[in-house]
Image (tube, rainbow, N blue to C red; front, side, top):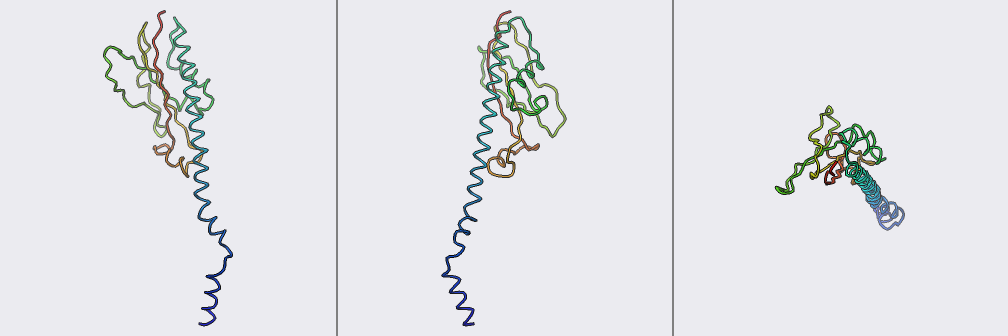
Length: 177
């Protein structure tokens, strides 16, 4: 017993391994913050690219007088201009809604995003506007997190198919033909 007591006192006073304990306690938190920072940077980059593609496409719609753009034409332009959407044809959903500025109620339904776990459904609402009509174009794209099991990636992937949705909205007036 005396020898065991002596070993326990020596173990308690020893400083060896103190850095290892500190590393084990701090390393997971630092890595989680680093992975979350990378994830947030990619989410911001993807949102900026989707918004840019939306702005360029809406500019073409506004200035392309006399040309009727279909759902597939707009989707193809958005896909070509935003290089960050993987499998763009199957992960991007568009919605074009005619708005009445004189009878504005301000409440729009939530954006309709693709659920990759289900079979692809048809276009929800896509109406080409007439001359001088106020139109809302909304694009919803699904992305997979880079680090789906840690930090921000774990919080983002809360849908059934494991992805998160980014939405870009633009409002424009249909130019006269």
